[in-house]
Each structure stands twice: as structure tokens, then as C-alpha cells.
Image 1 (cartoon, rainbow, N blue to C red):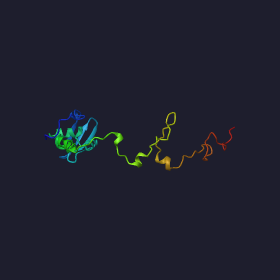
Image 2: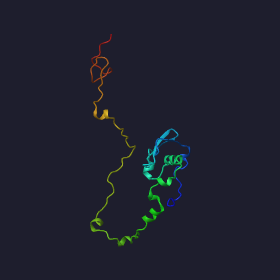
Image 3: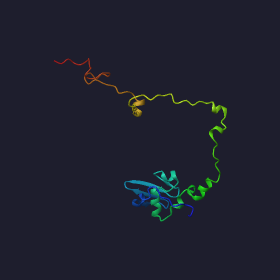
Image 4: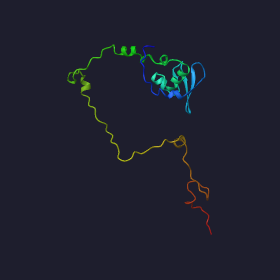
Length: 165
């Protein structure tokens, strides 16, 4: 397509060493080292998430497209075309006048924005560990004594210990 510019793809050389296996006509498994990525060209999706996020083929989709001898241009979003870029700038954007000539409503001009009141404490911040479900909702661990078998104390602090001769 003539509307797509020639671009330098991020990671464009990454897909050269990837192995591609066909699952169906549109679904491919791309093996990149030890990781596997599932690419669906029909839905323009990849398990890495980059294809659907940028709406541009990621390195794994490029490997699948190269394997099928297809052009990447059919899988790019129309937002990246030259026509789309020119269309977004058709509406003129007027420059703002000097700040002294701005028309600001009275209730906004009177509003005072104060800085945050919290002060950061000195020293190293305390790390709070993520508590397991058992720690939050479960019962606390009960200490039991090895000498008498009662709960609430241990062998060292046992007062029911048998006398040794």
C-alpha cells in the first residue's frame, strides 16, 4: 500500500531467528528462544500484547507474516497512514493569546490550590509484606509445650515440668 511509510520497526531483527509453526491458517506459534507466543493474524492479536496495544505487528507477528510471505501493511492500523495523519491536522488549532487576556470564570480564578499537607517521614520506609490469606483470616499459631502438652507456653517456660533428680 502506498499510504504506509517505510518505518524502522522496533525489534525488527528479533523475528529473524524465531521459529514459526502453523496451527491453522491464521494462528501461528512463534518460538523465540525458550518462550512461545501465539499469534492470531485474523484478529491481529499476539500473546505478548504488543500487537493489540500498538495496532502494529510485533516482532512475533512479523515472524509469522514472513513465514507466510505476506506484507505487514495489511495488518497495520489505518491510523498510521499518511492520509490519516493529514486528516487529523485538517482542523485548524488557534494559538492562545497572552495569559493576561484569558477569559477565566470568577469561581475558578478565586480557587486556591494548596500544596499537599503530608510530610514524608525521615529514614528508610517500612516495607509491608503481602499477607497470605491464612494470616489475614486464619487463626494464629498456638504454642504448645513438649513437656506437659498444654498450650500457651513452651518447654523452656514450662512450670509443670517434672522434677529431675
